[in-house]
Each structure stands twice: as structure tokens, then as C-alpha cells.
Length: 226
Image (tube, rainbow, N blue to C red; front, side):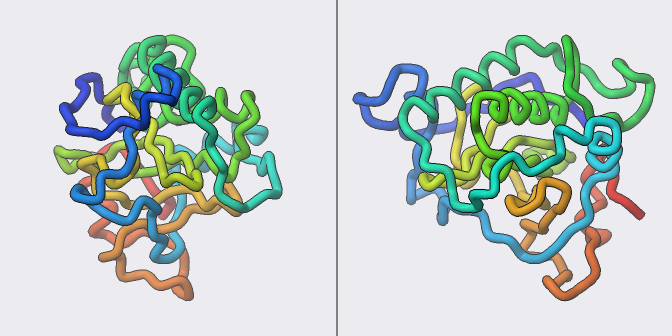
């Protein structure tokens, strides 16, 4: 999976001045851009191969940490926490491909000093869970980026909307304020299960889990199970 290091220029609205300064970097919904603020699920999907391998190596990172399935009520302090964690990981980890770091095309892990997009997202998820965020709110997500290339981000599922933590940009945005085409993400019910976010996906909930060929093509560096 390719890494991103250049922040994209986006026109965003900021939350009210009563919110702490760090949290003001969390963008709120602008109805003129795109709606709704919550992602829609279109069926089941196979998890990326790199994620399956990651769970086999680090099973504690792929367990349910809370039985509460409701959306997380994010206070201004919690929104500020998203901003702090997103910025810190983006600045602490040097962008590098899996081939450069591990000598293989695809390797999902918690990075120490260097990593690519999914490594950034995994580390942010790990840190937020350690800070008390339930696993059902922190969902690894695969998208096609503005270049139609495979990219991974972290979706944060809150009552205010689905926020995106992205290594390409420090500002935390709602999913509908990003330039991405959303393909699939973890299920909030079970972190080992993935669901489709693509309305053009031919699958239905009753179909066998998988990713259509059109989804796989263009997701360079993201491998799904055969």
C-alpha cells in the first residue's frame, strides 16, 4: 500500500469556539458538501490479506474491547483527543513502503519509526483503545484515494458522525468531507469481520463474502483473500 505525505487542501467548517483549541481542528458536517454524516453498509466483504496476517501475529489487537454497540458520544475533550493522536502519529512516523521497511509488498503492523498508511491507522487505533475508546468505534477502512490508488484510514464511529483519521492530513474530517471512494471497513460488531461500503458492489448481504473484481482493481498494494 502506498503512503501519503502531502496534506490536501480542503475547505472545512470548524466546531464552535467553546471547544478546546485542539478540537477545533476536527471538521464538522457541511451539508453543502455531501450527506449523510454516517457511512452506509452494503453487504459483507473479505478482509485484506495483510489485516488477516496482522491479527494472526497480534491477536490482542483484533479482539472486542467493549460490548456496547451504540455510537460513541464524543465530548469536546474526546474530539480533541482524536486531533492530538492523529497529529502525533502523523508526525512521529516517517512514511515508507512495506518493501522499504520489511522487504515485502504487504505487511500490516504497529510501526515504531516508519510505516505506510495502514500502519499509521493501526497505531492510532491502538493508542485510542489504550485511552479508553471501545474497539467498536475504531474501524480500519480501505478507500480509493484522489489518485484512484489503494489507501487505508481509520474511521471513528461517533454520534456526531463518522470521522476519518488520515496520515495524509492532520485535520480530522467527517468521511463525507474527504475526496475518497470508500470500499470496505471493519464491522463495529466484530473487528475481524469486514463490510462493503461501495454502493456499486454487486454483492448482497446474503452473498458469500468477497470483494468484486472492480473493487480489487485499482486498490494497489491492498490484497484480499482469494
